Length: 178
Image 1: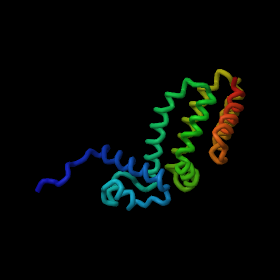
Image 2: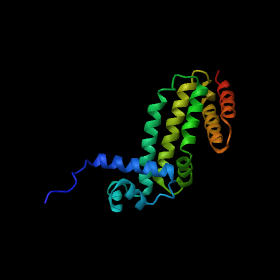
Image 3: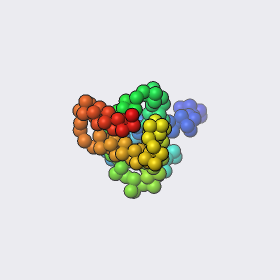
Image 4: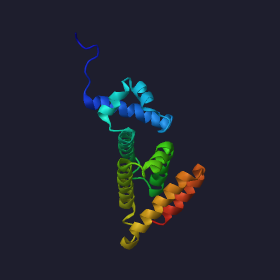
């Protein structure tokens, strides 16, 4: 008897699972999204997810990789703008995904895969910042300036400031590199 549904490419199915997980993790939260709910949203049997991902953390890493790939593609649009705009854009991107950011920070101590992803994310983000400011900062101060910027962004994520307040903080930060 012929199959009732055409066979689907493994990468295509994996991408569908990641897209469904991304939507649910952002809308409902990681902890509130059960694997059964994810399977329903993706239109697969629950055990199918485990053919593609070792566990829920592995799926989260795949979602984070997709989010980061999209953000890096979008960053090209702001990469040549003033550094204050780049920092504000980054804050906005992270705020839009606040639930995922919180989940990553809550789970990095429990998941080696998430810890490794977090470290790689910071290396990427800090590398982009470093490239943007290295001409304006003495070499012996560059590491400290990058850390100050990271701490500033993390502070903006944890404190509810208005957009003008965020802009003022980012402008003051950027003035260090003028």
